[in-house]
Length: 589
Image 1 (cartoon, rainbow, N blue to C red):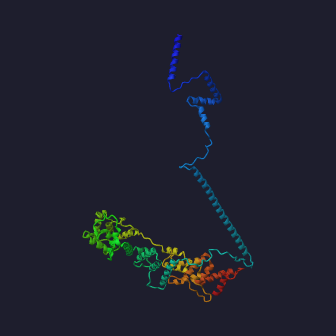
Image 2 (cartoon, rainbow, N blue to C red):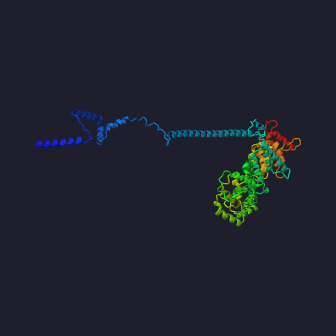
Image 3 (cartoon, one colour):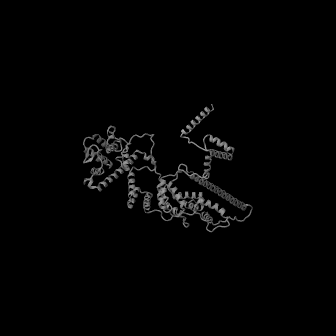
């Protein structure tokens, strides 16, 4: 029985051994009893050293297959030195730059606050000091007036340093260059004719154009040519509102016609220059007139370009519609009509429209022709590959004002000419806003004269004379207001108003006397200047100007008032204003 139990136990042991040896994942561990004993002692020593807490930790982590000793070694190798070091900036969030900016902003805000506090403190101390000084002066004045004392009031005039504001700005070296001086001479001559009442005189813009010819500046010459052309309109009524005058249909038609005329004249000159520079390629010949000129120009303009899109044949070896367009562009509608008639009878409808356009270019076509041209344009011409044909229809018939014609209008002048050609006289809705702007002539002249008004007063006054028909917001003559301001700023009253001669009591002529007329009086200007001098507290200057203006009554009143106080002054400088007032009062009495 025992043998069977032992045999069964041995069999089970061998089976376990076989299972262990057959498992390749688990290595077979063979230890002797001594090794097992040594490992037991080592584990026992560790358990004793780590204490009960470590024992529980080892038991807990050991049951989960975690080596607590290895984890402890790894934790000991970690360094805490870099924990509190600043992080390196990255592209998305630059912490270092952000903190630097915050620090600088804090410093700047602190400096700004200290600066404001310092300024406020200084301001408060200044006013405290001024109030204190004023209180002391008031006490002195009141103490001096108490009691029946017959002593003189000690109000001595202490010498004062002259300030920049009180120093007269005398006229000095001219600030005008040679070109500005030439224009100023023309203005002076023009105003002299007006003052003498000359009825026939050359327009000022023509005189300016002659000055531009002398200096040979192409751009300036061109500018005056434009002004000469646009100024050739019916004369405006002097007292009429400029905006209302520009809204007059007659004036508007004249402005449009003159604008087109200038653009056409300029383009014809351009075509002549191009043809003259290339006579061999243009093949114009010696025949005068617009048609040969346009023929030569079209040959040069279309040279080397693809002309397959151009339609309706040719005229004298040139495409038809470019010839018609450039004839119209140069201002010769009859030459365009000649081209169409020479091309054949396929364009009778448009020829009739062009003839109606030639009879009155500023008005729209008749209703019948306008309907026919618009219908043909919508059905055929709008989709044509010939840009010149579309442009010609729009110029004559105003078929499509929204078409910019970029293939034909290559310059700003071309664009303006096309837009002006599309303007026709139609009925106007009263609800439509009037898009009118006016030039501020007064501001323009004042800004220009500011440069030399103190160095060249005569030229400045001549420019101010253009403002004689304008009023300021208070209704005063703008020319007289400008003269008053010039007198106050320069303080050279003798030059502007003249000087009172003590021997004769008469006033010499000043610069302003040449502009005297029923609406402008130099004495009124002097009176206005004197009133403003009184308001500014410049009484000595006011006395001089009041004397020039002939206001003796005011001088007598002021002399009496001032002499009342001047008689009690213990000390007076020889030749001062109070002495002069006393002498003046004696003379007036």
